[in-house]
Image 1 (cartoon, rainbow, N blue to C red):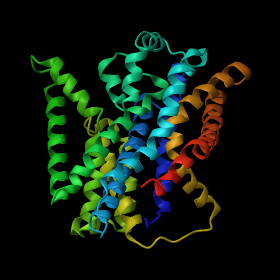
Image 2 (cartoon, rainbow, N blue to C red):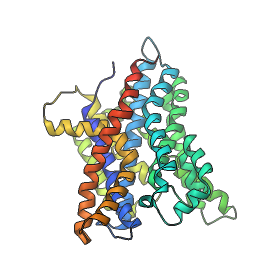
Image 3 (cartoon, rainbow, N blue to C red):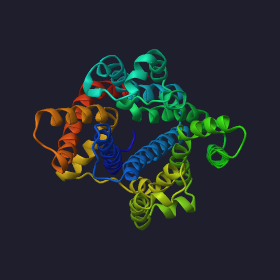
Image 4 (cartoon, rainbow, N blue to C red):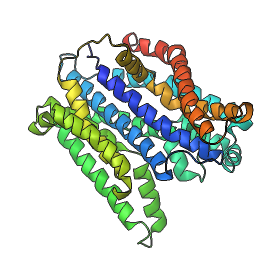
Length: 369
């Protein structure tokens, strides 16, 4: 039976909220308003949230996989794919189809240039999303599909889901993961370094975008940490201390404010690495149940974090439209209202989609064998 870690659910909720806050600023910008954050910060807080999601996902999946591999039953690849499909696909396809065929037809979701290109290339873009490679939309086409702009990360995770079973079935998965991480990082760095400095500019640019939009390195950071801790490597054991947990979490805050000094393209990886001590600390000791209402509420936020992540942009655009057209709020009052009412609305809608769409399929994970 899998161990439940409430602290990781709280981390999920924090990561989802970071992405939500960054996208509140995006929604304001789309409506020709300036938010409270500098332009660079609104991107950065979203990057940090996404990187935490990646590290957490890679960590937990590798932890479960190595424990199953060393059990009597062994690592069941077929069950792994079934569980992943039941976890991500129902809500992903629901939001995708509603977004493409319903929401984009309403003026609430109109975005200049982008909506026109979506109507022109609707089938091509839809196929990328339905085949679980939405990250390639940003490479192939000029304009994003903003109401599902965050879906590129799901494509990255799917690629990792395909890789992980093969990595776990080799004799020394940890060594292979480290080699793959180094190769990925070097290739990404080389393509970034050569950008604009070679006659093969277009090819180098495409390569860099492919590496940038498929954050396998962040997922591997989490997986490597999980395997090293499982094998009781000194490095991993030392990182699992309370002091390192506090330091790593604080480092993320520091990086948010010093992000302009970080090498572009590697900030995701640095955020993923910084959260590792938190993951190690809260999965190394005995889990204590709490009756604290606030902590339980935060942990519930983690359970609905996938719904928050997939639906928040849509909900924020609706709230922005309603506040703009049906209230007398303006200036900072309007912005603050969008933050507060928008966040509350996202949490409520996400609770509904969790219970109506996600939960029934999640229960099948223990039934479908």
